[in-house]
Length: 285
Image (cartoon, rainbow, N blue to C red; front, top):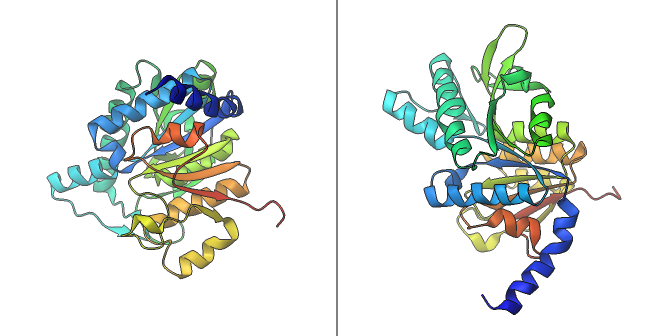
């Protein structure tokens, strides 16, 4: 890279570094960026960079591929309803083992001593009850978020890495909580500046098989129409519903970015180009 190009990039990044310094960023991490080893290492390095630049970073992760692999190994069928995993008692045991154990600690290990692993059970970080809209087994509906542990870690410049296994504090029953929903709830509770969903698609697409149909911006009032057209469907439903709810409840920005693109989080945070699909609320409405 030529010196002039490097200087231009730093100049472009400066106002964004100032904007996000001292602010909280909640990242929901999933998709291919969690599976590919090189991408995973690059993402974790970028999160350390953000922390060194003064951004308070919280990483909330799923682990669908790892859970699916373990269920297949054990001969347990995976079933989804409206984008949410049906979770019987046997599946719940696997979710707890894989999410709060293997996946969580693998991510912490890549954060160069700055990561601390949590799950929703720790300090009642994610309190929940059984999902009420339909029978999904041990799928949790969030009733409260405690930010005590997360804020202590952020104040000491650690990166909390949160696995989304929640608990009903009244009876100690564990629940599988959708990671997109949990990330949105945590962002609201922390008063985050930005909620970022890193996944394995370019963003919201008019045609899910054609990256050139990317919809770069969505105003909240447009979401229901996109659902009616089938553009927002399946696993996108809890993701976008969570983002919309977060914006309505005070989070300033929410964006879906392509975790398959190296350094996509830095491009989104610190460049004029951005990436993916930005969700926003028209303040005049």
